[in-house]
Length: 184
Ligand SMILES: [Mg+2]
Image 1 (cartoon, rainbow, N blue to C red):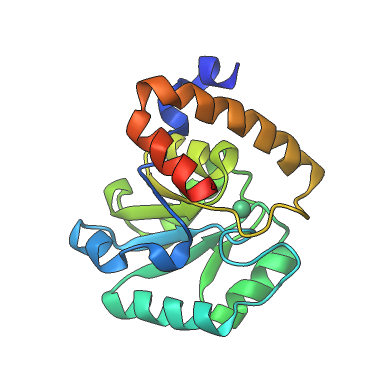
Image 2 (cartoon, rainbow, N blue to C red):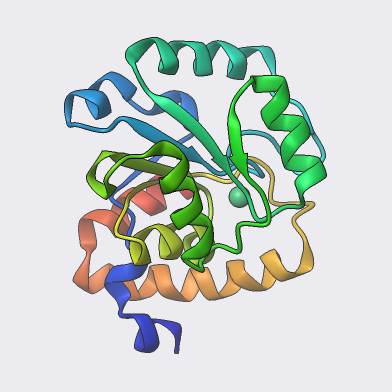
C-alpha cells in the first residue's frame, strides 16, 4: 500500500552499512557531501542510552576533521535529543516527524547546504529512508542497534518494512542483497 502511494523507489537507500563506524566518510566527502543528518535512536545509541559513547565522540571528531557539519535529526522529544546533541556539541532537530519533510527542511536551513551535499544516516526505512528520499537526499541505511525495546509503533513499522524489502528483491536486487547482508 505504502509503496503504491509513494513508489517503491522512495524506500530504497543509496547504500547500506553495518553501523555508523563502517561508513567511508572521507569517500563521502570526496563525492561532494558536506553535512550529515544523523538519526539518533538505534542508529547512534539504543533507545535506553541517552549520551554519546566515547567511540561515538571520537567518530564525530573524525567526521568534523574531514570537514563535515553534523546535525542530529530525531523524531524523539526535545529533552532527549537536546541532551544527546549538547553532549556531542552539535546542533539538532527534535520532533522531526520523519518521514514528513518539515524536519529535513529545517535541518537543511541550519546547514545552509543544497540537497546534493547532504548525507542522511538512519536505521528505519519507513522514517529515515522515506523521509530522506522524499526530501531529495542520499541516505545510508544502517542496521538497528537494538530492536528488542523498540516502541510499539516502531515494531509495527518493522513489519511493514519487511514487506517493502521483499518488494525490492526483483526491482532493486543489489540494494535488496545489501539490506539482507546488514540485517543478518
Ligand atoms: Mg532510529
